Image 1 (spheres, rainbow, N blue to C red):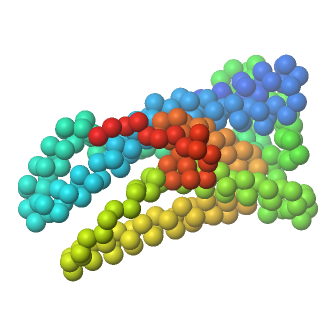
Image 2: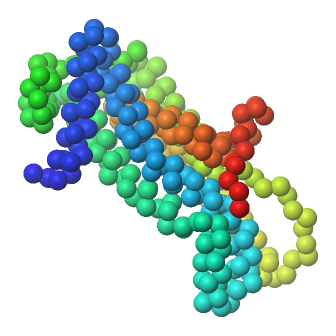
Image 3: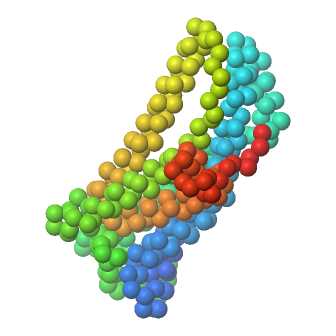
Length: 282
């Protein structure tokens, strides 16, 4: 058997069906949608420490950028000295440049497994749906005897926004909401704009450096718009159940990010009392 199925996909699927069975036993309506939300929140909370490490590391690296730029200006011509000064800087501030990458890499299998689980669960059109799902359940008590109710709020979890002509125009709200939430999180990932500095007389090399930095900033600004648009486009062709998972994941991520690093560049859209400042010191 595939180890990925054994250690990630099947356990997550079983947890989802446990939640579903509990809600059904309690007579709570729209149990499948609530189960997807609860499962997504539980998985998000389970990887909370990894995400926190990643966010804190990114925050520290952003705070050190002026020092890194200074070292590059002073020792960029000497690679050995440049690396030595960077290592010294990281040691002084307790920063590990790889600390932000490792947690993200560890989270990717969980993201993929959760996506696969939700994709299996909302694939109600398959003739062998019940057989396929029940074959992966550990305990017979959690077996499904029928396809669960797919209604959640005013939508059907198996419907897709690109079917709006047959299911109703309101379903187009799903990709819009998905794109907006993704924009908020992307904007929060961008650092707050630094106060403008007094301009000095620029040399030719300084002009090139500023031009490169402006180009990178322009690309970053464009990606903040492009990524949400891409996610919204994917959501347009995905079942609502998958968008429910993605949006729950994003909302919990926004809350976590705000608690740890503040609103970032999105802070300018918030009231002053919510413009939480980073407490990380350098």
